[in-house]
Length: 300
Image (cartoon, rainbow, N blue to C red; front, side):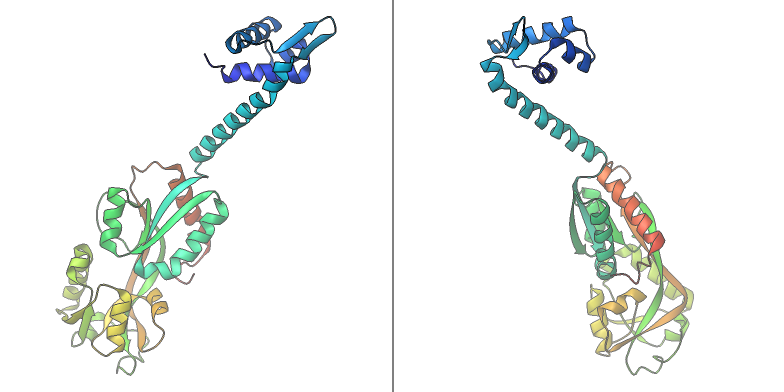
C-alpha cells in the first residue's frame, strides 16, 4: 500500500508540533483519530516514525529522513492543485488565435498585448490566414478564437469589436481620387479587381447584392486572394477595389482610399459556442474590455 496525502499531512503536523495533542488541535481532529492514522502510516511503511516517552514525542531517525520527503510530496500535490485551479480560472493553458490577414496588422498587437498583460501564464499561438481556412479552423478545432470580418455563416458565437468605413481604393492620379466620398453607382464604369469567388462565397453574395442595388454588374478584370495583392493591382492601374479603411496601413503609396457613402464593415471576434475552454472566455472578456476603451481600427 501507499500512504495517502492525509496521512502525510498528519505526520508532518505531529513532527512540526512535537506533540500529538497540539497536532490534533491544529488539524481539528481528535487525538485518537490522529494516533490511529499515524499508526496506520507506520504499518504501511514498516517503520517507526516517532519515539514517544515521558519527555514527549520526537522523530525517530527514520522519521527524520522521511520528513523532507513527505513535505516534498505535499508541496508537489499543492502545486498540482494550484495548476488545476489556475486552468479552471483560465489563467494558464494554450489558446490558438486566428487573424484575418486584413485585420492582423492593426488587431494582433493590441489583442496579444492585452491578453499577455492580464493572463501572463497563458500561451498564445497566433496565425494570420484568409477567411476560408479561418472558419474551417474554428469548426475543426484548429483555432479557438478568430478575428475577422463577419463570416456570414451560422454556428458561430461572435462579438463586434469595431466598425470602420468601407472605402473605394483608387490609383493615385485617378479623376475621382480627390473626392471626399463616393457612392457605388458613381463607379459603374470602372474596372474592378476583386478576390476570387472561391475565396469565400458568402462574402461575394453580399458584394453581388450591393452592386445589384447600385444598378450595375462590375467589370472585374483581375483577381487576387490577398488585400496586399489587390492594393498592388490598384497601384499598378489595373482597376479599383473596395476595402475597409484599416487596409490603408498595408500600403501607403500609389493608392488613395475614398470613403463609400453609408458603407461600414464590422470586425468581429468569433468562436464556437460549444468551446468551453476557460482560457477562451477569459480572453474574450479581456478583448471585449479592450475594444470598449480602444479604437482597434487604429491600433497596432
